Length: 568
View 1 (cartoon, one colour):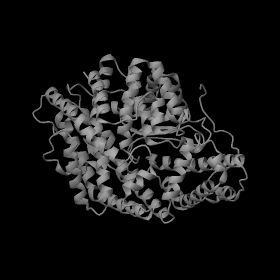
View 2 (view 1 turned 90 degrees about the vertical axis):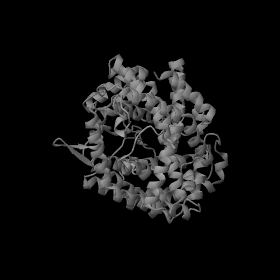
View 3 (view 1 turned 60 degrees about the horizontal axis):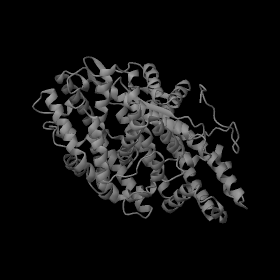
View 4 (view 1 turned 180 degrees about the vertical axis):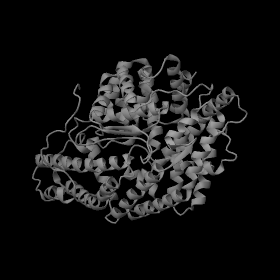
């Protein structure tokens, strides 16, 4: 892959110049698919291919509208276009999707398909048929629009410091400053700003919980948690496995977190560790400053990725040439970061809120892992082959974070590179309990749907105490602590998409362990696994990457011990 840009493949079914502005632009094609006669296996394969192409075009239009409105939440034209898709295209698309699913399920020629090749597709299709309810379409619309409100609320948050206005991602840079009083000031300003919208966010979330609960009831489930396990296609693990994950993290990881924080307290020479002491360098060295502009971040990221594999670097170069990167934080931009796969062209878009920190470097290579995954799936024949599970998607991104350690020379001298690696490894250990916490919190939320905002905040506090080491002092910041979960956009926008990070992190640690032993083989296995898209089960994909799909206590202990050996 040496080209500077990529164009989409020639269409076989849809008109080459078709653009989906309204439902009417695509309706004729879906009507033809609905009425087309399927007389044999070849007809069925052609029908599957044509449907896949149609879905990819509609899906890509939706994704571009989502991208534009997150890049500029204050642009009314972008917001209106996004909302218009949800209100006028999504309901009809969901209905016709169900009808087409029924058509293929009823075809006698399904049994003649290669059952191994189409196993994942048919398994997912069967589940979607089981949970689909027409009355849930308007409810799904509501959740999408309300989730968009979250991005608008957070994107508008700024603080003032010494006469300048900062977005919250920009302000977070001050939390790495050696001046403790400055860190405290910024911590209090940003959290007080969040508290200004406490009731607004609590109310928004309560509304989302009720709508989601009704969706679950309509589909015949007792609660939204059980509904989402079906919706997310969690065929390879269940609720009990998640509970096992929570308990394993508590017993195997939190003791190490406690040691890391005790060491931090000693290094900082403070009697009490406050939440604003967690991001500064523990030896009170100046914060790492890996880049200043988006151009510099891209250039150095390409060099960093190239150190591992030239293909990784080429993927980001192509995206940069195509202007498929929006990396800097600014007012009016939605929070967070993502890699958005664009299914027809096969080149993804990376969105993030960089402010010049090492955390931004971690985010960039994380999203680069997702991007590489997208490029490696471009040759798969069907749109649904790229509809990957989150557990696989995050394996791609989190493995990339670790495999690019050697390339951090692009950003740092040797001493700062070592600091960055140690910070990252300690961050992995610290992040695993947070993942368990967010997941366990959601299990409680959706199995207790009638809870009040106060009960929810108190439950969060209870779980936060259970799944943290107790080294951080929160006296005086009780309200901040109770509402910490507001900053986790997944809770508002993509419910139950979070434990996947923990599962994939364990897989990524194992990939990195393999990489340390044999770089070429580990990268080859990694690429081969990602090239599968979602044509195999999650355990099979992990096996192709050379690792286990496993979160037992014994396996987690083994991986944690490996990390201990890498942390100085």
